Amino acid sequence: MRALIIFIFFFFLSGCVERNGSTITKKDKLLDGEWMLVSIDEKYPFIRNGLKFSEDNQVFHIDTQGHTVPAHNIEIYKVYGDTLEIIDYKYEPQFIQEKGTHIFLIKELNQDELVLECIYPSPNRITFRKQ
Image 1 (cartoon, rainbow, N blue to C red):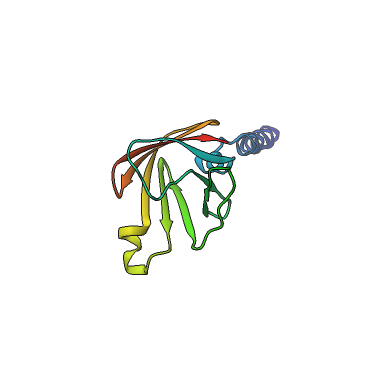
Image 2: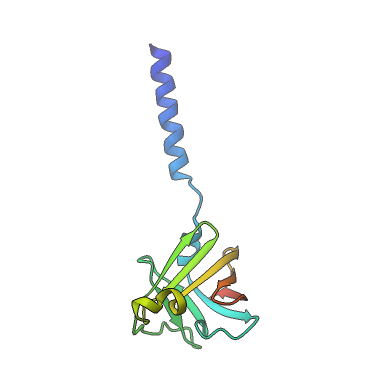
């Protein structure tokens, strides 16, 4: 009986350590700081100077001085594994998929750099540095 209690205690303890020492998710890395545009393969009108991701899944644009630009419409982001989806709600509902959806593959994401490969609407490679 004592061995069973000790086993359960260690099992519970190992679960607590795993939860406390969990790895940082890609969303956590995106939230940490503002991402300024460094390079872009082709002109992409959606991204001007930089992006800032908020905890409530909104995306804000950054101007050349590094200030957040007030949004006139809601832009929401979602992270699915290695995929980043940004939806711009300035379009009417029937055009959101066609014009308002931007899908990126996260090629690299670390403390200093974010590299996105645009999948939709047109192929492009975009590099950001954390400000």
